[in-house]
Length: 328
Ligand code: ATP
Ligand code: MG
Image 1 (tube, rainbow, N blue to C red):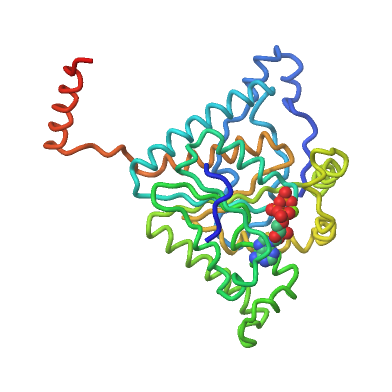
Image 2 (cartoon, protein in one colour):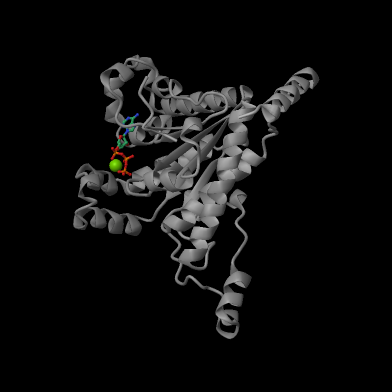
């Protein structure tokens, strides 16, 4: 089993303070707090059903912060809240949380994971990144390699890419299937993808029935924002290592990827394991939305710190008494 990496339509948005005439007549601070919209993470959830369109989900929205300092304050509050919920998850030890990140290159998966999980105890959280499968992994069914990395009870598991690549990159590059040695009768176009969506939905329902909750984030960036970020990888010597020439080939297939994402999210966003489409052109805003969605999900679980029963409680009290009376 691989070791975890670390423990622990384009709708342009023109102005940060888009408050219309009010913004011009009210004092800035009043205006900011007055105009800031409450962050409702449910707004970004993909509702199960066939009508959903990716083109209706923006890559940028009005920011939920009004300055850098305000962002820092908010993200700090939320990461602290997340840290205490994770500590409760760990102590309660009944549920696990699997968080999946999918996105086009340079959408900010790594930095979102780093910032959002920054306050979490490394003992209770594991991050796995899934790249092109190796020869041994290709000898198994497509869910095998990720299943081995699912979080234990009481833990948070983060997948940086996941089994969803099997209906995204593999769908855009169906020649990859040749390396998977599947029986010919299973390769029929119409059956293959439907079958994979079904397998994924079955897996996630199974996990839910066994106490593992699944949250899925698609970091949605515009093609123009990706252009800027890839350019930054080329121009900034500290980011050169992140650039891969292959990223440009995938970029050329942008529309194919968007079609694959749309169908995938539509087929696999369920009540229990919902997809969230995160407007990700603004990284800070994206992190605030992601952390809020995780906090909301953890809060919805019925968790409590284990309490000792009567006899054990008495025993603890007498041990505490002894320690208090102990002379140094
Ligand atoms: P960044 O956003 O920083 O570029 P990344 O997640 O793209 O990070 P890379 O090492 O650049 O990381 O790329 C990993 C590659 O592995 C991706 O192109 C992804 O599509 C590919 N990959 C992951 N899982 C599979 C799979 N099951 N089959 C084929 N390719 C896969
Ligand atoms: Mg990449």
